[in-house]
Every structure is written in structure tokens, then in C-alpha cells.
Amino acid sequence: MRAQIKLIMMLVIAGQPAISSTAQDGILDEYIRIGLENNIAIQKSNLSYQKDLAVMQEARGYFLPGLSFHARYTIARGGRTFEFPAGDMLNPLFQNITALNTAMAAINPMYPSLPAYPSADNIIFKFYRPTEHETKFSLIQPLFNPAIYYNYRIKQVETEIGLTGIEITGRNLVKQITDAYYDYLRSHAFDRLADEVIVLATENLRVCNSLYVNNMITSDIVLRAEADLAGAGVTKSETTGAINSSQAMFNYLLKRDLREPIIRDTSIVTVPGGETLAESISLAPSRRPETALIDKWLEANRHFISLTRTDALPVVAGAVDYGFQGEKYSFGKDDDFLLASVVLRWNISAGNTARSKTRQAKIDREMLELNREELESQIELQVTTAYYDLNTAFEAAEAATRALEPAIVSFGMARARFREGEVSYAGMLEAQTMMIKAKQQLLDRQYLFMKKKAAYNLATGNTTIK
Image (cartoon, rainbow, N blue to C red; front, side, top):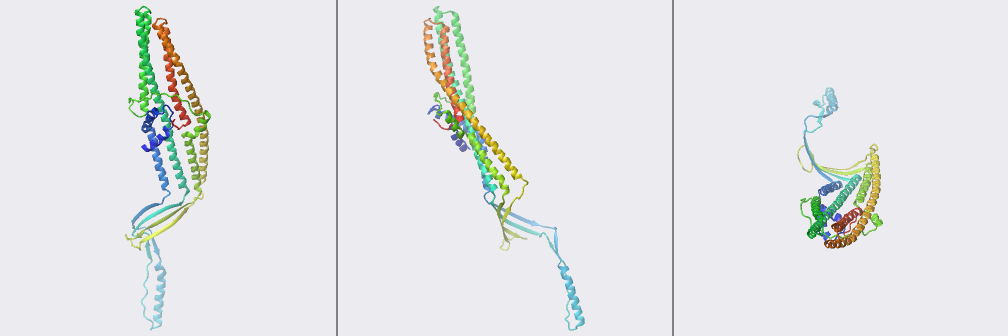
């Protein structure tokens, strides 16, 4: 089972977005490997795949000859009889000969004296012999049976369908693990930002107390600073809760203890997609396993149509029986027998059932072709949406990056002027709020880009690690 899961992991992990050429490969990919190995849905699908392999092996076995051993010993009592009329045929002849001898002896004294012929009874044969045995080997070899071939081809394609289904499940799981990992990183980043806000609020309260002692501000400003510090503590509690929740969700997807620590990759690389929209739309259908799945169903349908048409063809098989027969167990050269046969069976008519099956299969084929056409439209929509979402997220991340530096500089200037008593606490707090909001927006946009990149890779079926 693990060998099959590793095969699927090789197919699925290749479709992951590029975050960092070194850290990403060593952290997130390792978690993806663990998740794919432990996921119950994939394990169940893999068991189903193993069963399909066994069914395919069973179908392949019908090509080979079948050898069986048979032994029978029979004791018969009663039953039907067959009467051979030997007495009815011979007794009139015997009577005539006896009468002729008697007449000749009366006419001619020299005629020899002959005894009278006895009467004969009819002979009765029993249909069943009192004891009988038959011990033999039977060999049957299909010589011409197209149904065996097409049934094997159908089972072979169904096995490939099962493998493709595992790949689809694995790719969706990879997307879930990736999103959960980014959510966990985002919650940690916001928690660090909450710590930063607490430090700023603590420093603001210290400065306010110092200014109040020097009669430079009123007591209400100090109370406002204390409230801001308390509010920062509430935000810290919320970010801690978000960490615990995202940690539990991530470990749940990996089927681990919900409180198990998670290694964090703090590197963030926002790189836009390398393909144009037209290239992505053109290449996505050939990359997506969903398209391959429908193609496999179409292939299975073609074989099934051929299978229904074999009902009109003859079936030829060869059979050989070798063994021993007799009233007693004896295995000498006079007791053995050999039967070799070529058997032909041809269903001349089956009440149009085969034609009806063929028609049903053709209708199924038309439905599959419509499903494929619909899937291609859905893939085009998914790729288009994911492409524009990714580019929008990239532009938003770039804009948030540009907005952060002015906000930091503005806050630094406002804070310095507040300490000198040139700017009110409200003015300084507004600059601080703008800076914190700019950092929050940058974090939101960066991790949103990461998730959009994963969604884009899933939509396009991109299987290249960059």
C-alpha cells in the first residue's frame, strides 16, 4: 500500500506552488508527504485500487486453460432395466427344430435320437451397474471467445480509473494542506504583530505618564493610553486563539495530534504566474486528472460496446478428459480413457438484448462526451478565475509593500513630535494605527497571494516545481 501511496505522492507533490526553492521543499513538501501517507480517504482509495488490480488479474486468468480433477464412485440399487428378447426370438426356432427332430425320428428309424432344445429366457440388463467409478482430469481451453478479451480490457481501464481517482483526491488534499499551512503562518504573523502593538502601547503609556507628570497632557490622555494597551491585550488573545485553531486544523489534515508543533517557513516570495492566460487555458485540460478520468471512462465505454457485440459471435473451446472407469478401482491400461472435444456455441438469437445493450452503451458514450465538453468549459472558467485572482493578489501585495514604508516613516515622525509635545496623542495614535493597518494589509495580501498561487496551480494542473 505504501508503494502505491508514494507513487501518488510523486504525481501530486509535483503540482505545488513555488514559495522558496529551499525552505519550501524541506518543510511544506514534507508535511504534504505526511498528509498523503496518513489520509484515510487516500488509504481507502488505494485499497479500492488494490482490489481493482486483483479483479484485473482474475479477468486475465480466463485466457488460460482450466484444469480440474473429478472422482466419482457409484453404488446403484434398482432403477430402470432394459429387456433383451432373446427367449422370444430363439424359443420358436428351438421348438420347430425339436418338432422336426421328433418327426424325422418317427419316419426314419436310423435318424439319431436328439434331445429337445431347452427354452431360453429373455435377458434383463440393469441400466445402472451395481458399482462403478470414474476418475479423470478435465482440461478446458478457450480457443475463440472475444468476450474474454474485452472484459479484460475493461477491467484494465477500470484499474487506471482508480489510480486517476487517487490522484484527484491527492491533489485536492494537497491544496487543503497548503491553505491550512498558510493560514497557520498568517496567524503566527498576526500574533507577532500583536506583540509589536503591545510593545508600542506600553511605550505610549510610559510616555503619556511622563508627559502627565510634567503637566504637558491631561489625565484623559493617560486613560486613553491605558485603554489602548488593554485593547492590544485583547487582540493578542484573539491571535493566540487563531494560532491554536489553525494548528489544530493543519494537524487534523495530517492525521496527527492536534497540538503537535508545526515548523514554520517564514520566507515569503510573491512571484506571479509564468504562463499567459491563453497558455494556461490551452495546457490545463491535458494536465488535469479530471480530463484523463473522463477519457478513461470513454475508453472503457468503447470496450464495453465491443463486448456487447460479441454476443453475435460464436464461442469455441477445446476440452480434453483423461481418466479411468470401471466397476472396481483399477488403473491399468485397459481401464483408462481419453476424450478430446472441440465445442462450438453460437447464440443465433437472444431477443435483441445484445442490440439493446449496445444502444445503451452508445447513449452512455454520448453522455460522457457531453461531460467532457462541460468539464473543458469548467476548467477554462476555473483557470481564468484563478489567473485573474492570482494577478490581483500579486498587484495588491505589491501595493501593500509600497504603502508600508511611508506609513512607518510617518509614524516615526509623529511619535518623535508627540514626545516633544508638538503633536497630540490622537495625531500620533492615528499615525500608529495607519502603520499597523499597513502591516496587516501586507500580511493579508502576501498570504492571500500564496493561497491564490496554490489555487492557480490546482486549476491549471501545473506539475512543475520551480
